[in-house]
Length: 153
Image (cartoon, rainbow, N blue to C red; front, side, top):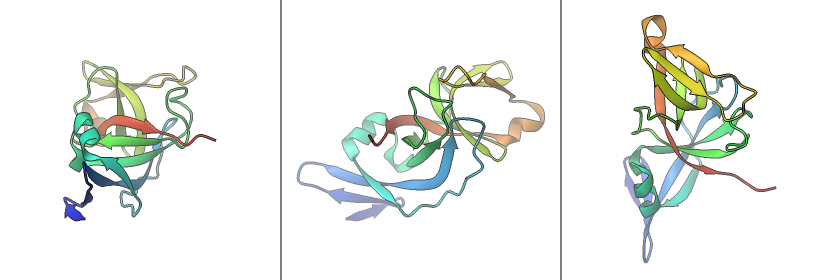
Protein backbone atom coordinates (compact mmCIF):
# COMPACT_ATOMS: atom_id res chain seq x y z
CA UNK A 1 0.00 0.00 0.00
CA UNK A 2 1.23 3.49 -0.95
CA UNK A 3 0.17 6.81 0.59
CA UNK A 4 -0.09 9.60 -2.02
CA UNK A 5 -1.64 12.99 -1.45
CA UNK A 6 -3.49 11.78 1.62
CA UNK A 7 -4.96 8.82 -0.28
CA UNK A 8 -4.12 5.16 0.08
CA UNK A 9 -3.29 3.33 -3.15
CA UNK A 10 -3.31 -0.47 -3.28
CA UNK A 11 -1.60 -2.31 -6.13
CA UNK A 12 -3.54 -5.32 -7.38
CA UNK A 13 -2.54 -7.94 -9.93
CA UNK A 14 -4.23 -6.15 -12.84
CA UNK A 15 -5.20 -2.72 -11.44
CA UNK A 16 -4.71 -0.13 -8.74
CA UNK A 17 -7.27 0.64 -6.05
CA UNK A 18 -7.60 4.07 -4.45
CA UNK A 19 -9.12 4.39 -1.00
CA UNK A 20 -11.19 7.60 -1.10
CA UNK A 21 -12.28 9.36 2.10
CA UNK A 22 -15.90 9.79 3.14
CA UNK A 23 -16.01 13.30 4.55
CA UNK A 24 -18.34 14.12 7.39
CA UNK A 25 -20.13 16.91 5.53
CA UNK A 26 -23.63 15.99 4.42
CA UNK A 27 -24.84 17.45 1.14
CA UNK A 28 -28.30 18.85 1.48
CA UNK A 29 -30.74 17.95 -1.24
CA UNK A 30 -33.26 20.31 0.25
CA UNK A 31 -32.91 23.59 2.06
CA UNK A 32 -29.20 23.48 2.90
CA UNK A 33 -27.13 21.49 5.35
CA UNK A 34 -25.10 23.01 8.14
CA UNK A 35 -23.08 19.84 8.80
CA UNK A 36 -19.81 20.82 7.19
CA UNK A 37 -17.01 19.07 9.06
CA UNK A 38 -14.50 17.93 6.46
CA UNK A 39 -12.45 15.20 8.12
CA UNK A 40 -13.39 11.56 7.92
CA UNK A 41 -11.78 8.28 8.84
CA UNK A 42 -13.87 6.01 6.62
CA UNK A 43 -12.48 5.18 3.19
CA UNK A 44 -13.99 3.35 0.25
CA UNK A 45 -12.24 1.49 -2.56
CA UNK A 46 -12.45 2.51 -6.22
CA UNK A 47 -10.45 1.33 -9.21
CA UNK A 48 -8.02 4.01 -10.36
CA UNK A 49 -8.87 3.51 -14.05
CA UNK A 50 -12.57 4.16 -13.27
CA UNK A 51 -11.74 7.34 -11.35
CA UNK A 52 -9.42 8.61 -14.10
CA UNK A 53 -12.36 8.50 -16.54
CA UNK A 54 -14.38 10.67 -14.14
CA UNK A 55 -11.77 13.32 -13.27
CA UNK A 56 -8.87 13.87 -10.88
CA UNK A 57 -8.75 11.03 -8.30
CA UNK A 58 -6.47 12.97 -5.93
CA UNK A 59 -9.21 15.63 -5.61
CA UNK A 60 -12.13 13.28 -4.99
CA UNK A 61 -14.12 12.73 -1.81
CA UNK A 62 -17.33 10.96 -0.95
CA UNK A 63 -20.23 12.75 0.73
CA UNK A 64 -23.63 11.53 1.90
CA UNK A 65 -26.84 13.23 0.72
CA UNK A 66 -29.56 14.42 3.11
CA UNK A 67 -33.05 15.36 1.90
CA UNK A 68 -35.37 14.67 -1.01
CA UNK A 69 -35.01 17.66 -3.34
CA UNK A 70 -32.96 15.67 -5.86
CA UNK A 71 -35.44 12.77 -6.09
CA UNK A 72 -35.90 10.69 -8.17
CA UNK A 73 -32.26 10.73 -9.39
CA UNK A 74 -30.54 11.20 -6.02
CA UNK A 75 -32.10 9.78 -2.86
CA UNK A 76 -31.74 10.62 0.82
CA UNK A 77 -28.63 8.83 2.18
CA UNK A 78 -27.10 8.22 -1.27
CA UNK A 79 -23.34 8.57 -1.48
CA UNK A 80 -22.01 11.05 -4.05
CA UNK A 81 -18.46 11.16 -5.40
CA UNK A 82 -17.36 14.78 -5.68
CA UNK A 83 -14.40 15.83 -7.82
CA UNK A 84 -13.15 19.01 -6.16
CA UNK A 85 -10.93 19.81 -9.16
CA UNK A 86 -14.05 20.45 -11.28
CA UNK A 87 -15.31 23.75 -9.86
CA UNK A 88 -16.25 25.67 -12.99
CA UNK A 89 -19.99 25.17 -13.46
CA UNK A 90 -21.05 23.65 -16.74
CA UNK A 91 -24.71 24.12 -17.62
CA UNK A 92 -26.83 21.27 -16.30
CA UNK A 93 -24.04 19.73 -14.21
CA UNK A 94 -24.65 18.37 -10.72
CA UNK A 95 -22.46 20.17 -8.16
CA UNK A 96 -21.85 20.45 -4.45
CA UNK A 97 -22.16 24.15 -3.63
CA UNK A 98 -21.53 26.02 -0.40
CA UNK A 99 -23.44 29.21 0.22
CA UNK A 100 -22.37 30.87 3.45
CA UNK A 101 -22.67 27.98 5.97
CA UNK A 102 -25.04 25.75 3.98
CA UNK A 103 -23.94 22.99 1.58
CA UNK A 104 -26.21 21.94 -1.31
CA UNK A 105 -26.25 19.32 -4.06
CA UNK A 106 -27.94 20.95 -7.05
CA UNK A 107 -27.98 21.21 -10.83
CA UNK A 108 -26.16 24.45 -11.69
CA UNK A 109 -26.80 26.96 -14.40
CA UNK A 110 -25.62 30.53 -14.66
CA UNK A 111 -27.21 33.76 -15.75
CA UNK A 112 -25.35 37.07 -15.92
CA UNK A 113 -24.35 37.76 -12.31
CA UNK A 114 -26.43 34.86 -10.96
CA UNK A 115 -26.00 31.24 -10.03
CA UNK A 116 -29.21 29.23 -10.52
CA UNK A 117 -29.46 26.04 -8.45
CA UNK A 118 -32.20 23.64 -9.53
CA UNK A 119 -33.59 20.49 -7.92
CA UNK A 120 -34.76 17.39 -9.78
CA UNK A 121 -37.79 17.32 -7.46
CA UNK A 122 -40.17 19.94 -8.89
CA UNK A 123 -41.66 20.57 -5.42
CA UNK A 124 -38.53 22.65 -4.75
CA UNK A 125 -38.29 25.94 -6.66
CA UNK A 126 -34.97 27.00 -8.21
CA UNK A 127 -32.66 29.01 -5.96
CA UNK A 128 -31.15 32.07 -7.62
CA UNK A 129 -28.09 33.46 -5.91
CA UNK A 130 -26.63 36.85 -6.78
CA UNK A 131 -23.00 36.06 -7.56
CA UNK A 132 -22.02 39.69 -7.13
CA UNK A 133 -22.07 42.02 -4.15
CA UNK A 134 -22.31 40.76 -0.57
CA UNK A 135 -22.69 37.05 -1.35
CA UNK A 136 -19.88 36.85 -3.90
CA UNK A 137 -17.37 35.71 -1.27
CA UNK A 138 -19.94 33.42 0.40
CA UNK A 139 -20.48 31.19 -2.65
CA UNK A 140 -18.07 28.33 -3.28
CA UNK A 141 -18.45 25.53 -5.77
CA UNK A 142 -17.02 22.56 -3.89
CA UNK A 143 -16.93 20.26 -6.90
CA UNK A 144 -18.82 18.30 -9.50
CA UNK A 145 -20.70 15.11 -8.66
CA UNK A 146 -19.25 12.39 -10.89
CA UNK A 147 -20.83 9.23 -9.41
CA UNK A 148 -23.79 8.32 -7.23
CA UNK A 149 -24.12 5.13 -5.21
CA UNK A 150 -26.87 3.79 -3.00
CA UNK A 151 -27.72 0.86 -0.84
CA UNK A 152 -30.74 -1.18 -1.84
CA UNK A 153 -33.20 -2.13 0.85
